[in-house]
Length: 129
Image (cartoon, rainbow, N blue to C red; front, side):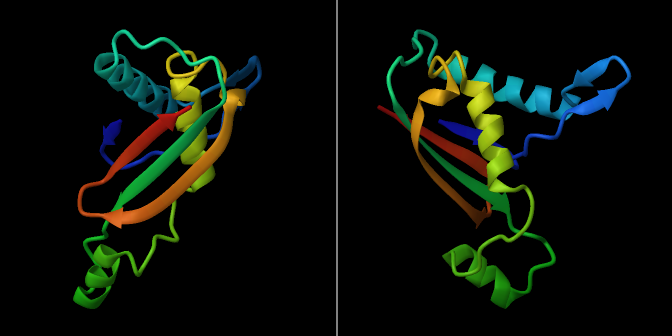
């Protein structure tokens, strides 16, 4: 499954005097992932067994990159050491797909996470069992 656009990290919950809430950017990005999954796989039933989750995050190449760095980024020689952090991307995807692709994110027994530069920013998600 492909999620077009710049990958977004799960933001920390916000605290106020009556409890916590999830920031709107996180809620809307998770809803976007859910909607894309439900549209692409309308009859999919959540998997009830251990799963492997592979996430490839393609981050936009900065416009300020020199020609030398641009070439290295395109070849995968120069990798992004910038935000969003992979653990926060992972949490966003795991929470968004819970109850849609699998019953509970505790079923994820194997993870493959990659973060690279891309001219076409997106998330590529593969779930196997």
